[in-house]
Image 1: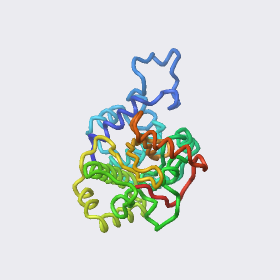
Image 2 (image 1 turned 45 degrees about the vertical axis):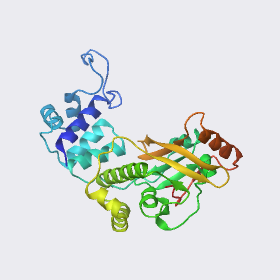
Image 3 (image 1 turned 120 degrees about the horizontal axis):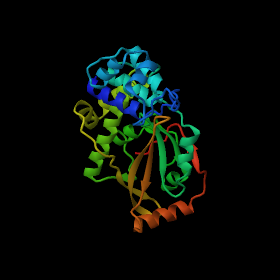
Image 4 (image 1 turned 90 degrees about the vertical axis):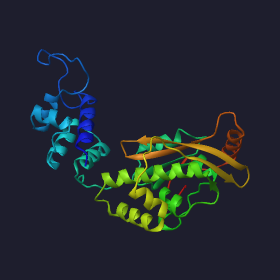
Length: 289
């Protein structure tokens, strides 16, 4: 629990909440004009049913709100599920129905469609792959259903790495640190998710590197995922991974690109152009690692 981080998060959300979206009038003789965007402390306090002084102390890290107050503030700010669960976690509470969302909405699926020439896939916050695009399939990612954990990127990376994907020691260490750090954050935000807790327990039992990162997490400032994909027809293709957030659904999109005008870009283009298949596929247990 971090009251300082909680206060910072509440203040940021307050200052970035559209007053109109929160149900407040933004013009008229009684509004007094607005010098800054977002909600005033007094407005948030009134909407949440607490005092303005309470909000001020909370944002300064000098108040520990009850679970009910956290929920009231989240509702007043009209925040999404991910932000609500983060506020609960920072305050030391389990969010209501704290389960990792595992469904991709229409917008998230369209995101994959917008990268027809670029391998990309969607995962939930626990690194379970839930959809892939055609370029990923062309690269050799596949959608075959295997053992139960093969649909999880963290499991495949730490416990059952694919032979056709290779990384240098440095990039492997960086990738593992990102996986563990994000999974740890997800575990904090979704403490009531039994399947997530089971995954973490199995990873800690099966992988000494994961257990070490879990017990002493590394500070991760950026997502690192450079990998060599060994395609059976086109040879080695070196790609860099970028991580995009899909906050409304609390999903992640991993997008793989080659250096511009490189031999890798040319080989990737050949592979994608030669493929025939659907633009996007929802999957249950595919496991790109």
